[in-house]
Image 1: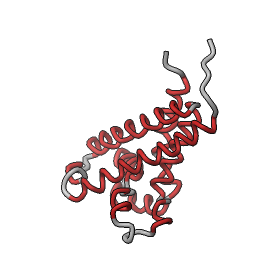
Image 2: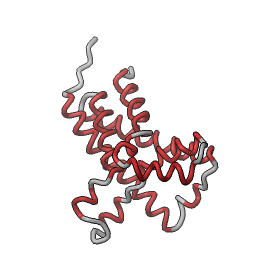
Image 3: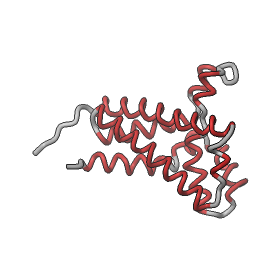
Image 4: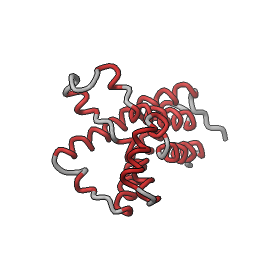
Length: 165
Protein backbone atom coordinates (compact mmCIF):
# COMPACT_ATOMS: atom_id res chain seq x y z
CA UNK A 1 0.00 0.00 0.00
CA UNK A 2 1.37 3.36 -1.00
CA UNK A 3 1.54 5.87 1.76
CA UNK A 4 0.05 9.29 1.29
CA UNK A 5 3.26 10.80 2.65
CA UNK A 6 5.24 9.49 -0.31
CA UNK A 7 2.81 10.89 -2.86
CA UNK A 8 2.52 14.25 -1.11
CA UNK A 9 6.33 14.46 -0.79
CA UNK A 10 6.76 13.83 -4.52
CA UNK A 11 4.07 16.36 -5.48
CA UNK A 12 5.48 19.06 -3.19
CA UNK A 13 9.03 18.40 -4.44
CA UNK A 14 7.97 18.72 -8.08
CA UNK A 15 6.05 21.93 -7.35
CA UNK A 16 9.04 23.41 -5.48
CA UNK A 17 11.32 22.51 -8.39
CA UNK A 18 9.66 25.22 -10.47
CA UNK A 19 10.58 27.95 -7.99
CA UNK A 20 13.50 26.74 -5.86
CA UNK A 21 16.40 27.86 -8.08
CA UNK A 22 14.49 31.11 -8.61
CA UNK A 23 14.51 31.68 -4.82
CA UNK A 24 18.31 31.44 -4.60
CA UNK A 25 19.28 33.09 -7.91
CA UNK A 26 16.44 35.42 -8.82
CA UNK A 27 18.24 38.01 -10.96
CA UNK A 28 19.92 35.61 -13.37
CA UNK A 29 16.79 33.56 -13.98
CA UNK A 30 14.66 36.66 -14.56
CA UNK A 31 17.17 37.85 -17.15
CA UNK A 32 17.06 34.45 -18.89
CA UNK A 33 13.26 34.51 -18.97
CA UNK A 34 13.19 38.03 -20.43
CA UNK A 35 15.86 37.17 -23.00
CA UNK A 36 14.71 33.74 -24.17
CA UNK A 37 11.05 33.19 -23.32
CA UNK A 38 9.17 36.36 -24.11
CA UNK A 39 5.56 35.54 -23.29
CA UNK A 40 5.56 31.78 -23.94
CA UNK A 41 4.35 30.08 -20.75
CA UNK A 42 5.78 26.66 -21.66
CA UNK A 43 9.18 28.18 -22.40
CA UNK A 44 9.11 29.99 -19.03
CA UNK A 45 8.25 26.71 -17.26
CA UNK A 46 11.04 24.90 -19.12
CA UNK A 47 13.53 27.62 -18.14
CA UNK A 48 12.44 27.53 -14.49
CA UNK A 49 12.78 23.76 -14.26
CA UNK A 50 15.98 23.70 -16.33
CA UNK A 51 17.59 26.30 -14.08
CA UNK A 52 17.90 23.60 -11.41
CA UNK A 53 20.37 21.68 -13.60
CA UNK A 54 22.82 24.53 -14.30
CA UNK A 55 25.51 23.69 -11.71
CA UNK A 56 28.15 21.36 -13.18
CA UNK A 57 29.52 19.27 -10.33
CA UNK A 58 31.86 17.28 -12.56
CA UNK A 59 33.85 20.32 -13.64
CA UNK A 60 33.76 21.60 -10.05
CA UNK A 61 35.46 18.39 -8.88
CA UNK A 62 37.88 18.06 -11.81
CA UNK A 63 38.98 21.71 -12.01
CA UNK A 64 38.55 23.39 -8.61
CA UNK A 65 40.72 26.34 -9.69
CA UNK A 66 38.05 27.35 -12.19
CA UNK A 67 35.56 28.14 -9.40
CA UNK A 68 36.08 29.09 -5.76
CA UNK A 69 36.45 25.91 -3.73
CA UNK A 70 34.19 26.50 -0.75
CA UNK A 71 31.84 29.11 -2.14
CA UNK A 72 31.48 27.29 -5.46
CA UNK A 73 29.87 24.30 -3.77
CA UNK A 74 27.10 26.52 -2.41
CA UNK A 75 25.83 27.39 -5.86
CA UNK A 76 22.14 28.36 -6.01
CA UNK A 77 21.25 25.21 -7.94
CA UNK A 78 22.73 22.81 -5.38
CA UNK A 79 21.10 24.78 -2.56
CA UNK A 80 17.80 24.48 -4.41
CA UNK A 81 18.16 20.70 -4.69
CA UNK A 82 19.13 20.40 -1.02
CA UNK A 83 16.01 22.44 -0.17
CA UNK A 84 13.79 20.27 -2.39
CA UNK A 85 15.26 17.09 -0.91
CA UNK A 86 14.89 18.39 2.63
CA UNK A 87 11.22 19.31 2.17
CA UNK A 88 10.40 16.05 0.38
CA UNK A 89 12.32 13.97 2.92
CA UNK A 90 10.64 15.71 5.83
CA UNK A 91 7.21 15.03 4.40
CA UNK A 92 8.07 11.39 3.62
CA UNK A 93 9.39 10.82 7.18
CA UNK A 94 12.26 8.39 7.65
CA UNK A 95 15.76 8.16 6.19
CA UNK A 96 15.09 5.51 3.56
CA UNK A 97 11.78 6.98 2.49
CA UNK A 98 13.23 10.51 2.37
CA UNK A 99 16.06 9.42 0.07
CA UNK A 100 13.67 7.44 -2.16
CA UNK A 101 11.17 10.29 -2.48
CA UNK A 102 13.79 12.92 -3.14
CA UNK A 103 15.44 10.72 -5.80
CA UNK A 104 12.08 10.18 -7.47
CA UNK A 105 11.55 13.93 -7.50
CA UNK A 106 14.80 14.41 -9.46
CA UNK A 107 13.80 11.77 -12.01
CA UNK A 108 10.31 13.27 -12.44
CA UNK A 109 11.67 16.82 -12.71
CA UNK A 110 14.27 15.71 -15.28
CA UNK A 111 11.56 14.07 -17.39
CA UNK A 112 9.34 17.12 -16.95
CA UNK A 113 12.18 19.39 -18.09
CA UNK A 114 12.75 17.28 -21.19
CA UNK A 115 9.03 17.16 -22.03
CA UNK A 116 8.52 20.89 -21.49
CA UNK A 117 11.59 21.67 -23.59
CA UNK A 118 10.32 19.50 -26.44
CA UNK A 119 6.84 21.05 -26.33
CA UNK A 120 8.20 24.60 -26.21
CA UNK A 121 10.45 23.97 -29.21
CA UNK A 122 13.86 24.08 -27.55
CA UNK A 123 16.69 22.17 -29.23
CA UNK A 124 17.60 19.40 -26.80
CA UNK A 125 20.25 17.87 -29.04
CA UNK A 126 22.58 20.70 -28.11
CA UNK A 127 22.29 19.75 -24.44
CA UNK A 128 23.05 16.06 -25.00
CA UNK A 129 26.01 16.12 -27.39
CA UNK A 130 29.61 17.29 -27.39
CA UNK A 131 30.81 19.54 -24.61
CA UNK A 132 27.26 20.32 -23.47
CA UNK A 133 26.75 16.63 -22.62
CA UNK A 134 29.48 16.99 -19.99
CA UNK A 135 27.71 20.01 -18.47
CA UNK A 136 24.26 18.40 -18.62
CA UNK A 137 25.47 15.22 -16.90
CA UNK A 138 27.23 17.39 -14.31
CA UNK A 139 23.95 19.19 -13.64
CA UNK A 140 22.09 15.90 -13.26
CA UNK A 141 24.80 14.57 -10.93
CA UNK A 142 24.65 17.71 -8.79
CA UNK A 143 20.86 17.34 -8.61
CA UNK A 144 21.17 13.79 -7.30
CA UNK A 145 23.88 14.75 -4.80
CA UNK A 146 21.81 17.70 -3.56
CA UNK A 147 18.62 15.72 -3.05
CA UNK A 148 20.47 12.86 -1.39
CA UNK A 149 21.94 15.30 1.11
CA UNK A 150 18.66 17.13 1.63
CA UNK A 151 16.49 13.99 1.64
CA UNK A 152 18.67 12.22 4.18
CA UNK A 153 18.78 15.25 6.48
CA UNK A 154 15.03 15.81 6.17
CA UNK A 155 14.26 12.13 6.67
CA UNK A 156 16.50 11.91 9.73
CA UNK A 157 15.10 15.06 11.33
CA UNK A 158 11.49 14.01 10.85
CA UNK A 159 12.05 10.81 12.77
CA UNK A 160 11.46 7.16 11.93
CA UNK A 161 8.46 6.15 9.86
CA UNK A 162 5.81 4.26 11.81
CA UNK A 163 2.87 2.70 10.07
CA UNK A 164 -0.29 2.42 12.10
CA UNK A 165 -2.96 -0.15 11.30
